[in-house]
Length: 534
Image (cartoon, rainbow, N blue to C red; front, top):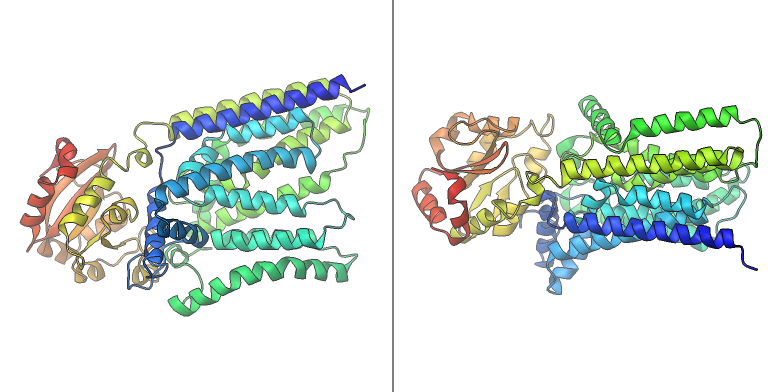
């Protein structure tokens, strides 16, 4: 006779899993127009790769403004086949998120041996996360990278004393190589994997496992690394030099960003719930059984801590929200729910813990939902409205400027890509000269270098609309106040994009009147006349 309790539990788990997928798909649908401006930087590199110029931002300039080489390579292949990189990147992210959600549930059931209810709750927590959903549709590599990281952990998180098949270790190395090509900071996870593969009681076996893991990883990553160094003259992507990782200023910024991200996912409430759980465990004298999967808890914690360390050292994402936290969001929720399950297995107060974990899940879903509604689905979110000004203005500029003319704009994604225009990035992410200057990112720039390159149009960001210019960043202020700027450039138009974000256009004096007239008469900008000022 089949055990009715087990059948009921499995059915409940599947229902919760399907509910998790329904929540994720709903959020992805609501956020379908959300696109990071930085994703267009990747599309631009992919387009130049497809055209034969290599992985560069501007053709003929040796500066790579991306850290997601594998995504650019995939999109370049799609462009060769006639596939729009925006659609390809979004669908890759969406499908990767679906795979990550299923893998999270599978990890909970197989590796952690969680009950169907606990595994389903883990999936619900992840699916309801606005951070997780927005990264799956934003056009960047985060969702795909998250899937690779969880897959690697699934392969190598065997019990102590249990031999991992060499083929499995090799597969983990292969996936780690892909992860390194997707984001070089995957090196933090590589270090953790080596620690997990090490056994001080079996040094010879540890060396063999290291070889099985490192060889396929290096076969994939080293050719890219060496070729990059030979072509560009420096080993790391241009953005590394622009941001100058591991400085004291970035450490402070990283700690602030990590704290903010953790608060967004309900870290305070998680601490409260775990404290209550600890009190329940301490007050329960009767023990049920010894928890057998503490090694998995350790592996999850190691991956989470490694990522947090990267956030601290890198200063966190500059675009906001939790782009750097998302790659370990599945591991984070697995870790927290795993702690609940560990105490549930070890104590006799199962009813209390079951009630507590259900309350925890409800709390996390509420926090996630509130965060998604408050920040990610807000109508003023600029990433939902790149097609309002950035894209049509980019198309218009591309139509009126010649092939050798250029612009300068620090939002280096959608606008330059849409017009296929040479862009001088004053922030340095996509410019070799500015990236290698001393100073802090988003502060350092070189107005003289920019003006001497004679871009036809310079676009600056202002917090306030016309006629009061208040620069959004020190970079815009440095350019605006540079002595020769007012001598060389005239103000022509200002566009009120959204709250506290206004684009001010300046053109070289010799062409200012023609550029202004052409922009005012361009059909792509007709709908903007209500928000333009001259």
